[in-house]
Length: 343
Image (cartoon, rainbow, N blue to C red; front, top):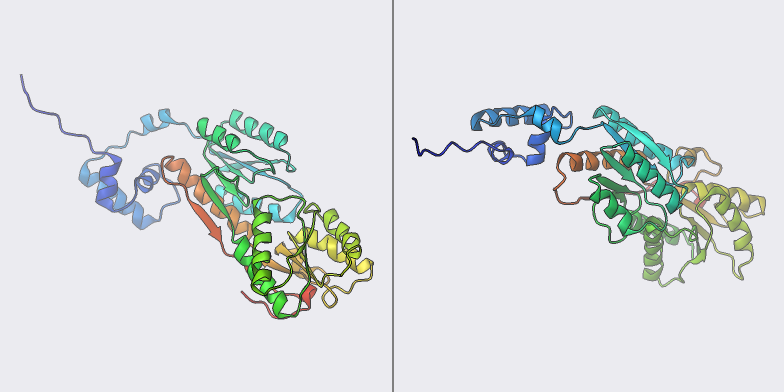
């Protein structure tokens, strides 16, 4: 009878150490994922052969069969910003061999709860979520408890943790406000404060930062929804103020379109008498009249980034959470008096 100890089987960690990559990268290569560059694939395969690693594909399939589907949950599908973001998500998923199930919540937590439950019933491999206003940490935790990876995009539930991607709202709004101040604007109003999700709070904080730095009064808050109708309502609200603002900062582009039309109909001269700005730089912003000054936040790029984060999470559920903040670029057009485009 032999007392010899059987040799230890090589593991993913052994392959990762030999190839100089992460365990997640090794896992992606062994599952033939298109996310890994060919030179890295070759290096991982060579390392696996050197350490004698054998990939049990049948066991891997039994451990967790993938449906190659992802849930995309946004607040509005008729907002061109989310249409652009959905296009970025769809293109990135298609390249990786996935398809998306799309749901819209209209910022209603009960609609969101139903959508998330149905997506779990369809056994999606993960979810990209723009949380509805009022979403609780427990709802994000429920997804994790059911083993459903989730990436929050554009908005974030405070205290929820997990993967997240959004534009640099605060820094971008600081740049926008400083441009308006340099152009001589002194009395600011902020439209869209009726829906104070995390993105709007960050934009408002950036505006307040810039005004405080220049010892200017804080912005007048117009508690309107971030919709075209909400923008149209700003003309009436501004007319009722004792002192007219000379800059109207809207929380998004769609709201700015509604505001410009209503203000001009009410006799305001947009661009000279009052500057109007948005956030997003949707396609209509460049062709609107007057063309809209806005923050270019790259909704397609945010959608693509959310897919990258989600696929990494699916491949390696135990990896540390990632927070990806995308740059926001100031685009100066006629609605604030014109001028050159600046970063």
